Length: 274
Image (cartoon, rainbow, N blue to C red; front, top):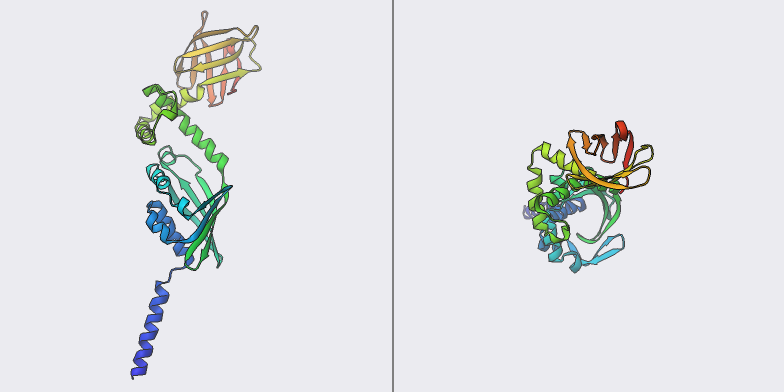
């Protein structure tokens, strides 16, 4: 009877030990949760002493990876990792993860950056993490620029800040929250103004060679014969731009952020050149 009881106790202990032992996918999930909590002490518990992080030409050791200043910045910008896919290959784990920050979320930037990572283990701890590749960086950057440029114009217009290097991360986050709280109509207006800034040139308009927009009122027209510039004013009316001249107003339809279609004397296609 005693032998039977001892055997039962032993069996229960084995079951408990097995149930307490986490699988590698579970460890990776817990590691990502710790990252999203910016808990460097907990993160450290998952890493071997000789841990290495590989990202392109960047190689970090454990102390550099856990640098508090870096994680404080991640916390400030609310960087988050979301696990999309996970593959258990016995000795390694491969994942696909989105990485985003507060600007991505507030400005609704899509698609997000997706990183393919490989996690290598030594026992129950991570020996290394390697970023194998980055998916859709061009699409992400295009979407980010389209959403961020109007916001940058809003900062310039409201606070007369010409150099974003003057701003702290905290300022940018404050202004972001202000900007996304604006009515949709105002944000659309800022988007139109922002994407107009710079030069639009034409190869098929006979009278006018280029339009150079500056701010919310000023535009310089370059004539198509001698290339002479003259400054005037403009105003936006829904999807149209009305430019004043000494004779009559010129009308341009906003086809998209890169293209204007001129009507009447300004008939032709004007494409953004910078």
